[in-house]
Image (tube, rainbow, N blue to C red):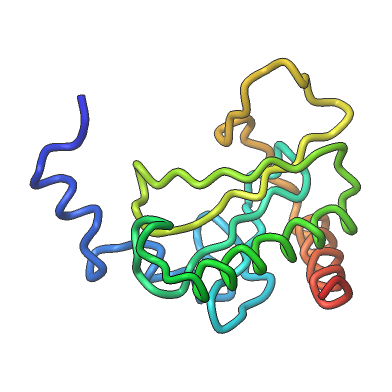
Length: 154
């Protein structure tokens, strides 16, 4: 059963949006800020069941790709591509999947979801795999590698 009209209105309300509230913060419950552009924030997800899993979050509260004009759309995907390149450089996955959903958190964002040699290529992608929470030193190392790669892969 889909959200009721009232539930959906709450989910799409920018005043109640969790991503609007914390996507810009250095750290939040779900992720750590890697980099920001004029258009997006790139964040390393705390659940590293798939090493390098990140999200690219639109700064503006929009809920769908169709709401972007051509220039904004190009800029958004350029940031997503750069995030993918950084993940590829820092984590050497076999393949990266890009998922734009938003039925639970209707704020435009893209999951940059690496697939590694240890992953089953015939299994459906599941962003809730794990969870695998790295010890702080390992998470800091992953963060540093990803941030360095972000700056190197313009």
